[in-house]
Length: 241
Length: 243
Ligand SMILES: CC(C)(COP(=O)(O)OP(=O)(O)OC[C@H]1O[C@@H](n2cnc3c(N)ncnc32)[C@H](O)[C@@H]1OP(=O)(O)O)[C@@H](O)C(=O)NCCC(=O)NCCS
Image 1 (tube, rainbow over the protein chains, first blue to last red):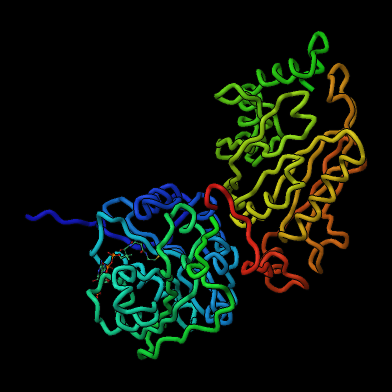
Image 2 (image 1 turned 90 degrees about the vertical axis):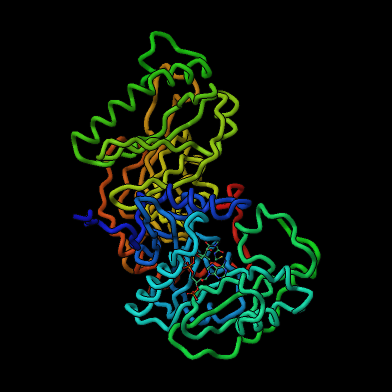
């Protein structure tokens, strides 16, 4: 008789403090040339909003992590930076009375990509969003591929629109492939200070976009970038480290 | 206390070096006590020799599961540096306990607001401050700062200082303290933001029940919401470890 597996091979569950070391190791593996998450940041996320931090365990190994918080609409829809709304990654600004789920982080082990692990994490977020009766999920992300296509598309906004239409070869990873996607571009060059810390300088004019998605809603127009109150970092030509 | 039992008075540097020899015994004793009594103990701070031979001022938490957590003092005082050659530590991290994450700030560290804020960002809701001050001035520096930390982070701050005299111990001979358990200042807390307090410079025990959900209430519904009303679009502490 064929051997039967009684325990699951792959599992999505909420993270606990016992997972902290594995999450740090994962983040170091995924973001190779950046400072990995610190223990304190993960502890902060776990204690601010334990229901919102998910891991994927594949064959007893932690291969995916998604960190989440809740924010009020005013903060989400306003031009913002990752460091600002997440309090530098600690999630201390989690607002249990807010109306949007906000994605702080999602990362998947490079050796376990394209197994729908990212998708599983996103589904976990989506269930949480529905359970909590929130308006939707918002997150900031990078726009991979923009650098390569910058000449062709010019502004990040134009590139974003093209990605939405599936124009360039989709190395732009837009995870929430189902449901409506509303997106806008943040003038931040790099969304997080954590990301900024150990990064080589970016070429002139490269902007990091802010994507906002709303689940279960028909695809809308991309949000127009708001009035830019801050000087464009890349335009300024200097990056404070 | 251990030092005053020495047969003759040691010079400050020799005395602190001698004190480090007691570390293993101290740790063993307190760990056994935490298990036997089924309690979590924040065991004050103790001069400890690190692997590279330096002497640091280290606070210890002995948890009822038998684990021991050491936290180094980040800022040695000019006096500690001069007389005892104490070096400052670098890591600033909460300790995970069965009562949630807690933080330890040794004495002078409580006078640097960035430390408490980082610990509270990491989820600490109670900060423990063992201290040793020899004058009322020194004591009040710690106390005022701890009360400020409790208000600005909307957390509890528990202070515990040494009182009385220590014969035979140079540089630690007189002590002044009035230990207390401080709260944010808002309706659900005691009127003066003091949950419990000892008498001035008398050795005694202070007891208070601290309710963590009252802190959550204060952070969301309180008259002021210092912890969450921060303007992170304007300012934020950047740590060298990326935190
Ligand atoms: C983005 C990331 C989480 C995706 O993880 P994953 O488990 O490999 O993704 P999944 O297998 O769940 O794929 C989900 C969808 O994205 C698509 N996708 C994933 N990687 C892709 C790639 N490199 N190029 C094009 N499409 C990709 C999949 O085809 C799938 O789309 P579909 O449902 O329409 O078929 C992972 O690549 C990662 O950790 N990247 C580095 C961290 C990062 O950039 N995080 C984003 C926030 S800053």
